[in-house]
Length: 219
Length: 220
Image (tube, rainbow over all chains, first blue to last red; front, side, top):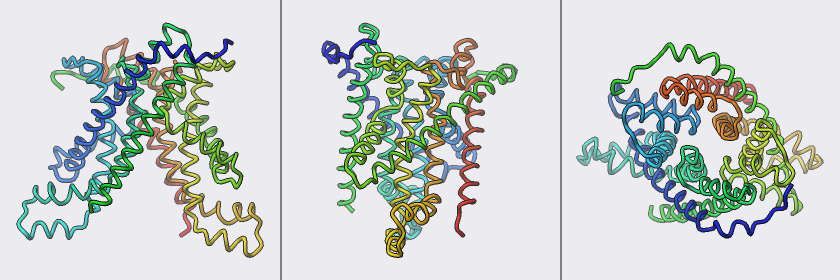
């Protein structure tokens, strides 16, 4: 048993901050992907012809029932197998993005169904087409109403993004591992990484609260 | 899939290994669930305590474990543990790490259910002479229990899928086995198919159990 010495972290501070920066970047880009695809999946499941909707439904079902880590292996190694050689970073963003898109889609689908029928009828009766009604009337309301659960999915995404370290993406966990491989001090570095995650989490939560307040005010 | 043909005989051949690995996943999940429920009950009680110190401890536990990734918590415990005199084998570290992590989420599920029971119920019980403990035991808990089942079920499904993380500290469970087979066969789709099937059967089983419990505790 060796004593703990957190001063060991100081020389690696830049490395860890770079890692944290990449974690933030991953969260934002995978979060954006999960939002866009969440809407896309939700609309497809609800309105597309069965031949398109059904595969998407099966995909959602499989991705909700299996661990993210397993899905990352599928994407990272599977795409190479079928001749698409993408870098680990892209595989990580796609994996995280699709995983959370499925959760967002589930929430948004429920949100779309919950929008009052009168809204659709009203839009249709003043001459909006089906697509226009969806695009300008139904989806904006559905997303506004489901902002809180979509926000919690983003918070989950921030934490789950740590998993992409296993396919070698240089985010926060990976930076900590790099420092540990030179210093053999896992406790100090993992605790420091945890603290950085905690701070990122607080910042994200504060940002989401502010965003939700704005949405609240604007209605 | 762009000319990729599935090798179904491979899936058949590896299936027995995956069933064995799935049993380890079940074992870890059940043990972590027991630990998590115990930690959650304690934390929920502490957070709702009248004295400040247990309240602070409960709040800190929930906030720290929910505010950081489960993966890091496992790494601190398994790789960092020996530095502070905690030497655990991968399986034990996995169970304890997963259990403490899900316990923080479950504490919120339990607290949410307790808070959701109408205050008038507790007030009325106290008025007719029930002690605080009796009120909790005979009036609030029976009503809250029903409200907890679904959220705790959601937590349990998350725990089951989250148990894949212990593969990173070399516990040989379902995801670890899948990773090894992908590495040795270069057949990611087949291997994913087998592992996904087993995960989904387990998730489905948990959902069914939650449904049954929900019916069992339903009032009407």
